[in-house]
Amino acid sequence: MQHRNIRGVVIIARKEVIEKLAALITVAFGLVAALAWNEAIKSLFAEGGPLHFIAAGGVWVYALIVTIIAVIAAIWIGRVSAKAQAEK
Image (tube, rainbow, N blue to C red; front, top):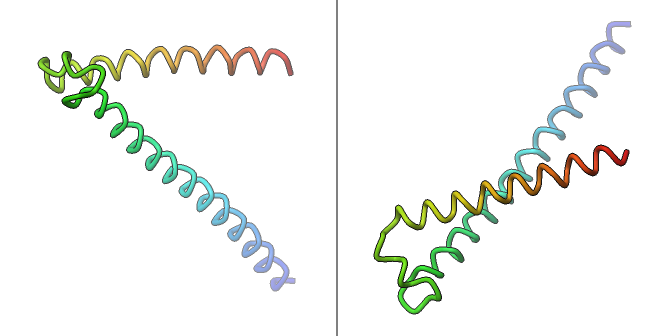
């Protein structure tokens, strides 16, 4: 009987490990994508980029613009998510 209990615990633990690894890998890919977008956005402000004239404001202007874009995106994603939940 105890053998079955141990086996059940091992199966549950294995599922939890797989779920956690899947979550960590997903987050890692998200971080890589975020870093790529960071470089892409920074290139807009680099000399010769379409927004290079704003670069005189330094990293503060860059941070402000990225924050505004992030807030707008978060609001939009929240609305889309709420709409999808309402349709269920």
